[in-house]
Length: 180
Ligand code: SME
Image (cartoon, rainbow, N blue to C red; front, side, top):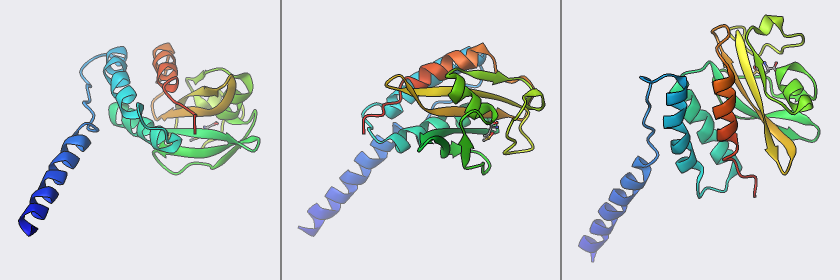
């Protein structure tokens, strides 16, 4: 009986290891930016497929993007009671609440469009959560036609983000399901 129990524990460990191996990312840093996104997007799709918990999926999306691109900061702000509230992120601590129209995040929410900022010093009202941040991209996340939050990415390099980032990040955000 005890022998059978030990075998069962060993078998469960094997299954656990196998299942969790599927969550290791394959990071391709040899290609150009588009190729790196093309390698990452299906992996993010596999990570979020079948998982209905929003925070779990947003957390894994941030982690995958940070692992692939080593950006300074990548994270979500979610619309809660009329303001943006900090959600899952990777990087240094950040400001927790942003009003509609304030900063790059609040502007992307208000305008319901992606904003690419090559130099944050040139953006009136930019909110400096980190003095190391030099350029930024913010993409709205939509749920049933309304902005439910934004994805914010910061870089310590000038003009780091372009239309390629906007295109692929938008594609990634379409994988998010708000059915909770
Ligand atoms: N810079 C953003 C604030 C958020 S932090 O960068 C994480 C803004 O201006 O909205």
